[in-house]
Length: 287
Ligand code: 13P
Image (cartoon, rainbow, N blue to C red; front, top):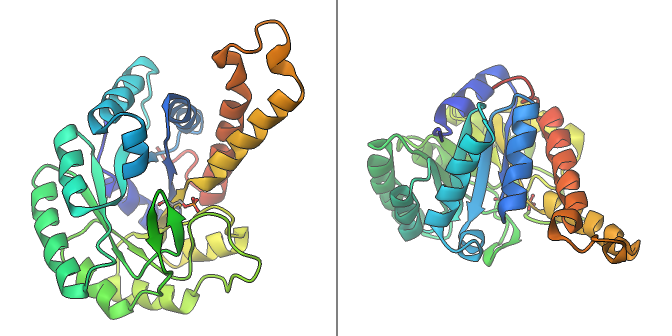
């Protein structure tokens, strides 16, 4: 069964650790992440972008796959299925399809419109026990066609959105989707500190988890980050392991072309990446 991400993130914030949101792309990804969470006895959030959902056929397919995989694999740790960077309309589509959590990315609207839409969504989602993430400022870089300029969030705007009854808040603090450029200025901890002071117990979300140095992750968690999103890292790990398999000519040996063999090294690489992140985030044993 899926759970909302509210309770697991409140626990994480109080316990000073973070729960990973790992984005899924297909069955292999989903299985690798769920099995790793179970092995690590860690809560987990499966992130689905609109683009990834479309690739997998649609939201109903995603819900069917995840819910049934939890059953078939006897996954007992808390799992939330979360729409990542959703538009207003798609948040409703996901709620209808059976997601347990949604992110409304209203960061590109003027603040008044972001507030109005977030308020509406919170009322409708909370009535069904579905958690809501909102965003202020913008996450730099591009993810599945969603492009952010990387604006640092205004802490007062964060407070205004947090007060609407959302369950967790993503704030742009210099984080970027995808690989960080060599001249990256780093995270703005002063902004994060100010946001946490104004928003109190609200679990904060750090997007762009790929490539943030360990010390910065630890510091962000100490300043109230309770959810960290990771996507590119698993993609790179999968691609790298798959390339090695092919380059070693293993697909040409015996039945090495069988997709179950061909994709196996990539799956193992995703598992290793997820486990490493869970160790860094401190969520192991917290299910
Ligand atoms: P990365 O792809 O940089 O890990 O970011 C993931 C993310 O923030 C998903 O919303």
